[in-house]
Length: 139
Image (cartoon, rainbow, N blue to C red; front, side, top):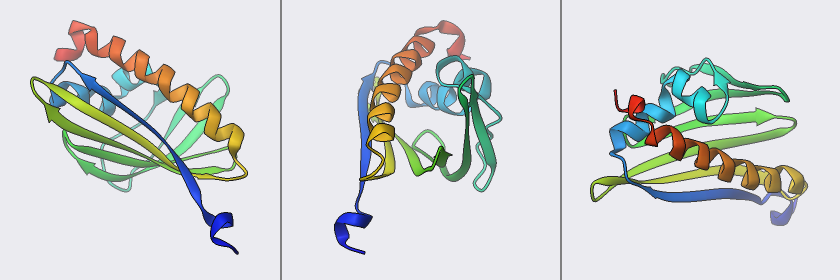
């Protein structure tokens, strides 16, 4: 195989949020909050834990790879032939949080999945910002 054949791409989104890392972390790790901005899930923040995301179009099989509370969350994301990794990185930024999401592992022949992920994650980020703005997320 050539290097080009094994090269992968990533979808990366970053936002500065006006919420502390602890509040953002809750939105990324509590199933009822995840459902409000992403999809239904049986997620638990435990390394090695398998879980899924479910929507009307199907499901995504996942496994928790890394947990560092209020800092890093990483899990596999497998659906429709895509084997990728989603990594969330939270960094304090003044009174808020700099949030970075990277979904890595898109092969050159997965252009549609790559473009779809870019579109989808922008929509999910907007939903996440709405959930964070909700005062109930503070508890």
